[in-house]
Amino acid sequence: MTAARTDNPADRTGVVDVVVVGRGLIGSAAVRHLAESGRRVVAVGPDEPTDWASWTGPFSSHGDQGRITRIADADPIKADAARRSIERYAELERRSGISFHHPCGLVVVPLDFDRWLATSLAAGAEAAEVDPAELAATTGITVPAGARVGRDGPPAGMINPRDLVRAQNVVARLAGASIVAEAATTLTSHGTGRDGVVEVGGPWGSVRARRAVVATGSFGHHLLGRRLDVVRRPRTVLLAELDEPAGPGTLPSLIVAPGPDDRLESIYWVPPVPYPDGRTLLKIGGSLTSNPVVGADAAGLDPHDPATDRELVEWFHGSGDPTEIEALHQSLAAMLPGAPPRWTSTVPCVYTGTPSGYPAIDWFDERVAVAIGGNGWSAKSSDELGRLAAALVTDGDLGQGPDQTVFAASWATADVSRPTGG
Image (cartoon, rainbow, N blue to C red; front, side, top):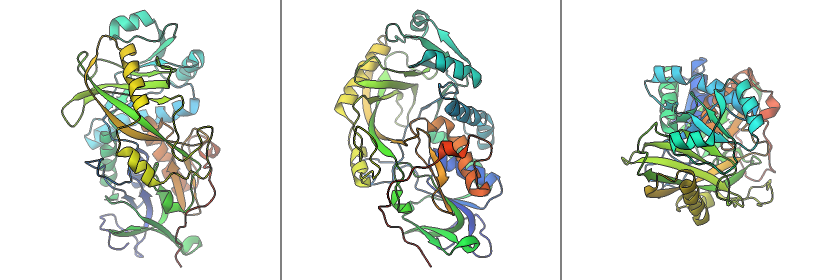
C-alpha cells in the first residue's frame, strides 16, 4: 500500500486481502461482510457530492432519502434476496446505532396478481389482496379501475439509502475495514498466479490487494478496460410536498404496473419523509414506455454501450425529461387526488440494467470481480448482494444463495484499454 492512508493493516508485503471500488449500497455491504469475515479490506470511492450540479462524477443512481423495501415479488430470486437482506436490518441498525428501516407497508398493483401473491407468500411476505374501495377510504389512494390490489405488511415499507450506507460503514469500520473517500482512476494487475496483486489508484495514492470487487454502478467501466453488457437509462424522479397527508408513516410505499398515465410502463412512490432541506417529500418515479436509452438502441441492447460518462454527467446536471415529469404529475394527481402538492422538484437519475435482469456478480479475471447492475431493485436487497460479492472473492463462488449462473456477467467487446503491470 502506498500514499493512501488506512488504518486497516496490510500484510508484510503491504498488500490487503480485498479492495472494493464503489461505496454505494452494494459496495458498502460487500465491505462490511468482508471485514466481518476477518479479511483485511479497503473501500475506495468518494462520498456523495453535496452539490450534484457542479459534480463531474462518478455518480450514484441518485441521492435521496427513500427506497422501497419488500419481500413480496413475483420473482422468487428477487424475493429471496430481499428477505435475506431484510432479516439483517435490525441487527445492522442495533450495531451501528443508525435507524434506516421504516416498515410502513406496501401497496402493489402487479401485472400478474396471482403469480405475485403466490410467490410472495411462498417467500414469507405478509401479502394479501385488498379491496380498492377500502384502500381509498383508509389511505386516499385511488388505483386504476378494475385493478386487483395487493398489500404487503411489515417489514415492507421503505429504507433510507443514505442511512443504510452510513450504517454499513460504521459496522465495517468496527470490524477493521478502512475507507478511502476518493475516486479510483486506475485498476492495474501485477504479476501472475498466487503472487499476483491488483493495484487501485488515483491522485490520492494507491492500494494493493490480492482481490478486488468493482461495484461502481453506471460509472467505472474504464477501470476494467472492458464493458459489461448493460444499458444506462436516464430517468426522472419527482419530489412532492403534499398539503395532506403531511407526515412520515401516513402512506404506504406503492408500486403500480401499468400506471394510470399511458406514457408510463409503471410507477412507484416512497411516502413522505424528511429531506435535508427541511421539507417532507413524497418521491414518485417510473419509466416512460418509450424511454430513451443512453448508449443503446431503444429496440434492444447495444453490446458496445457507447455512452460516455460525459453524457451521463450532462444528464445529471439537467432537470430531467419534460414528458416524464408531466406524466409523473398526472400519475400523482390520479393516484392521490385528495392531496395535491404545494411544491415540487425534479431529480435526474440513471437506471443500470443487465440482459438477465439480475446484477452481474461474477469474475472479470482471476483476481477482479464485479457487482454491477441494480436493474431497479437492488437497494432493498443490497446487503445480500454485497454478501454474495464478498463470498465470490473469498470462497470462489456465491456459497449460500442462487446458482452462479443467475448472476453471470455478460461482457461486451473489449473497447477500453486498461494498463497491466509487470
